[in-house]
Length: 223
Image (cartoon, rainbow, N blue to C red; front, top):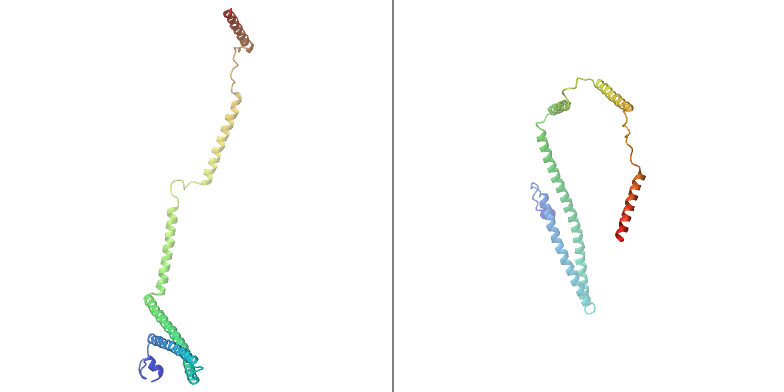
């Protein structure tokens, strides 16, 4: 069995392959395992670097061994980085494929539902139904127009004759008004009063006489 077969739990030749969801879950678990391995190697690299610095002047052989181990860890870390990139790419591709599969599945389901909905529909019957609807709408419009049209007394008269008669009536009324205005020339004016009005000087003389009498009366009272 191949490494990927062991990784994904695949069976023999006749075995059924894993589902997309199962494969995605396995890839996520592998990513998590490799990420933990990275953290472990980074800590080991830091420790070997500290050991090399500590023994750099005291124990050169120990310092060199520490640097060799550090190089091996760094190489493993680089390999894990590449593996993680490959797994991440494969997981994303598998997720996209799974999404496309679900989309196609749902579209197929919708297509079947639409087919079932149209199964009992006949295009000729639909055309006949639409034609009937159009005819009924036209009939309804004709009925509405007939109902809204004014009916009753007066429809049998000619409108032009009525307008001509109205013009004659207006002309008669105008002539009548002109005759009434012309007849006011012979209306008699009111007579002038025969009695004469009192003149203003006579009134003034009476007032002067009254003033003289008042003056004499005042002089007698003073004596």
